[in-house]
Length: 366
Ligand code: FAD
Ligand code: UDP
Image 1 (tube, rainbow, N blue to C red):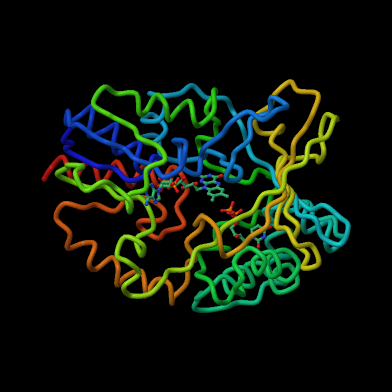
Image 2: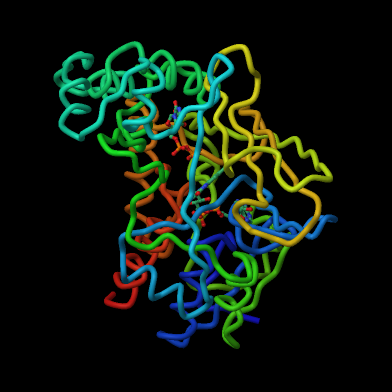
């Protein structure tokens, strides 16, 4: 059989592109994934205790884009969920992002108004200009004591790089608040798909023009497979045989434990920000996916360089290397690169959806 499009990867980029090509342009699409499931890193499944687990780490959907939210809403209902995170340091739990409560607890203060908090931050921040990296962005907002306590070691554990060796956008993802808002995100839309991500992906991919084949690696495809165009959502350096050198990625290892108790920790996610603990964070899925189970399951995350690529590493040197790949990628006429690994960007799910819809529009206008 001949396909109009071969799509490599059944994650957000691959699935959304397949759905648009199939339903809007009436194209015949083959989606392959080397894993044994769809949904990419957003894959979720129920464990033996009937708790929905995200196999590749917690995926919280949040966006300010009405367009992205309404697009995905064609394939799922949602339930409201606002993520909350605590940082564990020196035996105490602190609200993260840093807010008024965090400052009062760390410095034993009783700051009351937003104004008092911003005056205090002005007194402790160390002005940096220009903001060139992840150390600058935090120290410039909250000074070095809070940077050392909450960011320095956690970042080193997660990235195996000092914050000053990472783009400002990495730690710059985390805001600083002068009020008591302890939500991790403030986006307009913060919801979880009612039946989980995998079910949503099943519906996205259920079009009659779409064929999905799992356990199929693009680099081991039979040569008789016929297609006119290619959408590639895997690592871009691998596509080009690492000809300019390997791009670094961070991966994770998860250790699961289950307990017969209602909850293990007060919120879904506790970040272990001190250097003496090996893992980065502990995620308790029951808070997120809210099952009625009398058990609870936690996942400890250990960051590592080997293993499946999960995170691109945003920095000047990696950007430079990525641009070499991007230059040749832009010259391809029948291949488009889409998604977090193919574009080597620290994208959230909504950004991948928005970008894929944009690339689809370009294709539709070609
Ligand atoms: P992926 O989901 O990685 O899909 C790419 C697919 O391509 C994979 O399934 C892979 O198996 C397949 N593939 C690669 N190479 C080949 C090949 N050679 N042949 C066949 N198939 C191949 N985003 C949020 O918005 N909120 C969050 O809370 C959030 N939390 C996250 C937590 C973690 C631990 C991680 C790692 C990511 C998180 N993200 C989150 C980001 C989110 O996972 C990504 O934005 C999104 O999944 C990227 O979609 P994608 O299609 O680009 O890539
Ligand atoms: N970060 C940190 N301490 C925290 C939370 C975040 O140092 O308590 C830094 C760290 O470098 C992390 C980055 O900010 O990798 C982005 O955090 P986020 O929670 O967005 O990471 P993700 O959920 O993508 O792993």
